[in-house]
Image (cartoon, rainbow, N blue to C red; front, side, top):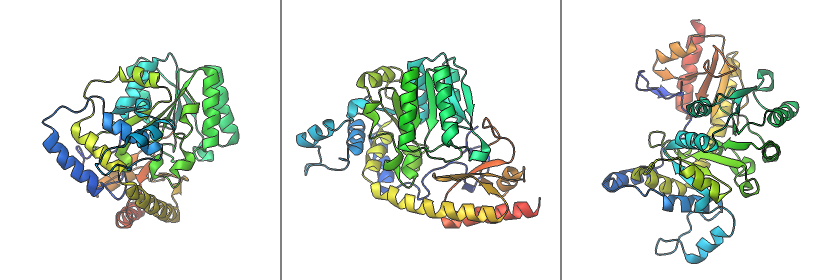
Length: 374
């Protein structure tokens, strides 16, 4: 079960999906409109321009274009001289398609997941005939990986030697962050075990310090690491379906690409991605809003006697004694994420997106009313 089911529910406010609370940037909206006119052509099957701009973006060269609107030869040489190139990047019809392609490429006999965690990893693995094992996170530790628990995860990897380990940073549904230092240790551990580490950074750009926690900068030092990201959350375009995978080895990228269908990324999606990469200010504004509103939501929920778990992301996991909170809010046209289907969670666990102050106040008012009528 995922959030965002506005098709079988009457929803006025959707707190079940965690997208940028500012919504879609105007530049991205304009690009999508242009994409309609260009949809009479097949999309570029190689997503060449988008992949080049993504590589440049992570090398600190995004948005620098010549007066003619084209990347200069000198700039291209500079980008290629600093690490990631277009050959390290794959684009997909959302992150989900890329997850499945990674599983098909790796074809693991065994895989390890954290619980609670995103169900999409399990779904992709099972589609490839692999039933994953789970490493349980503890509620008393905020569903994070402090000291001894992180060491226990590394021990599990070395003992089990899974083909794949999926880990989200920040995690989902709790929103905890692992430092770059710890992620490097985990990557080293996985290399010893012969494990490919897939780091899901789909929410990273909406945290307060993406560059400080992301593994992108050191990716080329870890041949067994893949980084998954998406425009979905950062630019509020879940219906467009646009994700990308960063691979340290160009050979790996080519092998995974063979698992993807042709023309998998539409013309509107490719144009929207290019427009999004030109709007870093939109993300900076969103980060400031999220930090402020996440604190506001957590404080108000705690004041109602509801336990919230510390999050660095644009969502909050909380536990509430009112087990019918989901149904009561849905009756008011408000959709939240019921987390009972997450491995390691059960009834009474919910996740909410961080939205604007007005929307957050509407949610809180209705939560308060639901608790009064419990």
